Image (tube, rainbow over all chains, first blue to last red; front, side, top):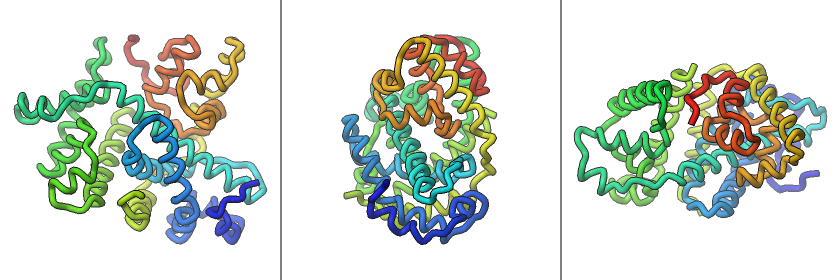
Length: 217
Length: 107
């Protein structure tokens, strides 16, 4: 049986809390869920990153991505348990594995040698090299005609998205994705709050993700 | 301690809830199919789920969620499928087909 402090508040949620999360845009219920799990989730993400030798600063990205996926996919969460505590525990475990999977994605992505920003800037022509760097960084370059066609379409999609961003937002996104520069470093350089960097990244990544899903369908 | 606030994070979450596309349990049927296939494959290989966790170098809970088909299907990306395919000695295209994804060219 769970004993965490974070779960105690959930005792007063009532019986239909899962339905409220799944079927309605019930801000109060989402706020309850967030209050209950956010700190614990953050701790678990940082622990997982540290265990894999990854920068704990990456927790911010993982956390944002995880909550976004939880919001999008809560409708597919199933628990046949009648017991309130067990259902809650299963929901947290579901959220946790989404976060752990995001950590895995980062680690897998970091196996590719990052391209230095200096090298990109030296040869950059209308952002073309930066985009190539992005594609390479995310292992989009593969052999095979079908794969090449898919990659070409994906690169066009990313190009379109990047063009829709302001020059500053585009630069921040590329520097974060390609060179793994920390939000705090970027914020200091651009003279804005670190949370503004997070917001820019969150917004653009979600747009990219939605376009990617649309593209794959 | 992280420099970003919970308040800001909740605002982002709430924006996402308001914009979310419809998602139903039907989305998970393919992920469950993949999970069942992998369970059978591990039995054939006389391997336990712990083997998969060790090979993929991930937490056991993550492997359990993949085998039970509870990890959202959208999270089963090609990188993960490639790693799993290598671990269970099957072509990645088989796993992609089970998920209803278009198979990419073989490596």
